[in-house]
Length: 92
Image (cartoon, one colour):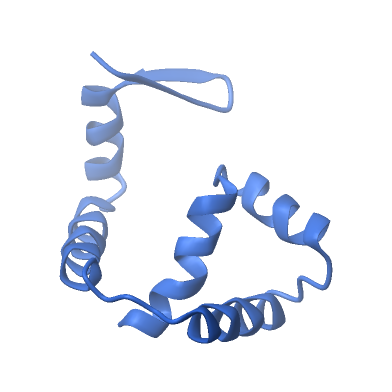
């Protein structure tokens, strides 16, 4: 069974799902998964990706690469996940 560590707690997948349900976050998670599935085939051009990244950085006031990386790390996100998150709005 897969485990995830959040702060000082290590949870297995069942415990994580139970927490998400208890905090009423499962409907939001399912909604986001459906959106990801729907937009997965949309390809952005390099200029569209760059523009989405620029808007993202502006919105979150990330003026340097280190600020960009720190923003993702503070949210437990890899650089690739932050980039996906930044371009996701444009795909919707």
